Length: 66
Image 1: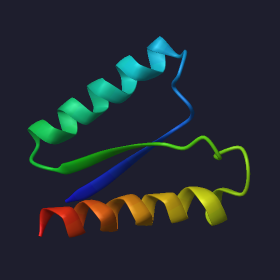
Image 2: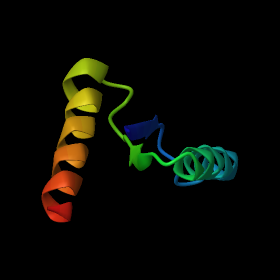
Image 3: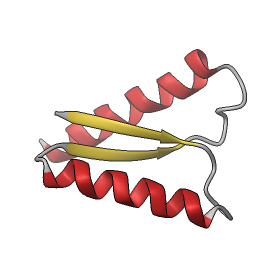
Image 4: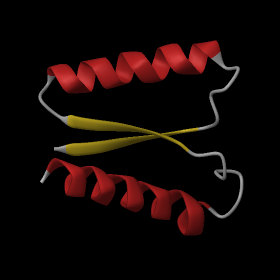
């Protein structure tokens, strides 16, 4: 299963890095494809920017893997 982890900006948030890494590690161990999506525009319109970014990343990864 493809899973996108949408996060707030992590540039100085060390706890956020650890949490995202731990979640990604567990999901990978269970056989999932996991993508970490750090969305700097999450404070704006989530449906317009955040979900669009998720779709772009997932399709780009699929295209590169083919």
